[in-house]
Image (cartoon, rainbow, N blue to C red):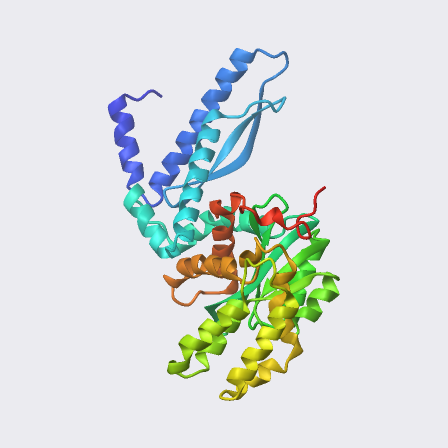
Length: 388
């Protein structure tokens, strides 16, 4: 039976008015195009014995719906419809766009609204969630990737983010490891969730790094969490610990009167000097004792610090080349990364679960182009960066 163009147009219009009519029509058109393409392929190739060999199931995603259809096959399995490759490219482009919008701070519902504006179709949260599957796969593979055997410097810290759990909202810890590689570039080695920050939690995180291939770390820079030195030595014996001097100075200054803050801050700057090749750990410890003695007369908390030998870990940086000390005596680098993490999660309020947080943090870390640039002069220290 033959139809005129007008008759075909009328039939198509009537069918599209039915429920799922447009989707049916798109599937029929795709199948028809592929069947025609197979016919041309067999005619042009002219391989002896090759012919039509049924269909295999296929599907793609478009206009907020999953399209299912049959893909024609040939006997030798050499036929691959070009239209299918075009559809796949469009699908991947939509997935990349959805992933980019989501990781820039939009919720799944907001991403759906953007797609509605662009394509004129409604995309539900479930539709957008399916489109984000490729992103989840990429981030998961990245977080589980094999690592190098040696990292000269590693910074560790936790970022605290509100998430839903058991019908309530609370702040939970997300452990982050940022490393300087031997080639002087930086990379995030891992992101890990436990409700609270603890030395035990960091032990699990370090064990994960070890299982993924890390055999040695030159120096770990961290905040003042108790028990950290012990868990580091258990997993990576011989690794030195540098506690963050910025955290320490901030804690001390916050515990003194406003009238004393300026003088206390200046004294601390003298204690934690950098860039002086003649300033040794022994001299710095002596300066620290004098500081604690001076201000301990007025503040018992400072006096107790002066009596605690564990505070020597704040002066580890003085064992390294004076030209890199300002890079390793604080966790500022990882603090800047945490600002990026908070920016992409803040727009959502409380996150629905820990998986969604790790997805956003992982993608943000993967996209840090600044980490591809080499850190100038950090390899001047031959203890951390030995010559090959």
